[in-house]
Amino acid sequence: MIPARVVADEREKASGVPEELGKLNVRVYFSMLQVADYVLSPELAVERKSVRDLVSSVYDSRLFYQAARLSASYAKPYLLVEGDSKEVERLAKNTRAFYGAIANVTLAYGLRLLYTANPAETAMAIAGLLTHARAKPLERVPLERPPKSKSVSQQQLYLVSSLPGVGRRLAERLLSKYGTPRKVMGLTAGELAMTQGIGWKKAEKVKEMLDSKFVKYEGAKAQTRLEN
Image (cartoon, rainbow, N blue to C red):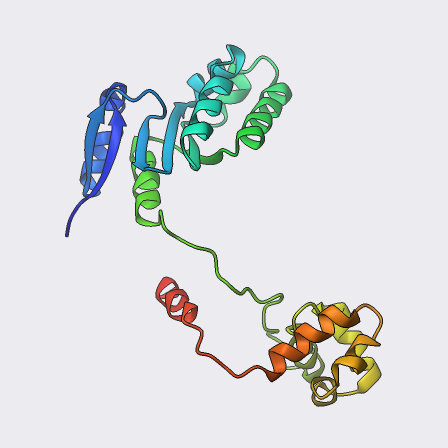
């Protein structure tokens, strides 16, 4: 198996993280990086900070400049905070102001936050990012989980609420008006549109879903692999 590869800043040699990455079959190359501490791909990079350095960088404004450069250089910038978060109370002059600054910088520059306790966990986090760098969200996500109860009413609500744009409240309204899921499924777009809260756009989407020929959903295979 070809080892995953990451470029680390020269100053990270003494951090212990490169050694831990080696144990995880990640090959580390060192360079004098101008931005970030670890570059995982052309669009993904990680800035690693100890809790002490994070607090210090908030007060001297370094964090804001680093965040600006990181987000300008990489589409997926990560800020990884390593250490005991309880130290913040001891190190920060004003805890509320500190967390306000963190919220400000992460939201303003689109930074993703990761927290680890030590170099070994940091290496695991970086290795995880390398493994799942191309992960994509599910194309379709059910609005609700299937009910665990065997109640027929709950099963009926779940079935109707799974229709596009319907949801539980509208499902209850439709079932109260028409009685059964079969009757709801058999409604014309016009009949659906006359139900309060649905309208023509939702009605057309529902009918399109019900009347379109089934095409095998390839994404289901990927999801099965993730769950196994």
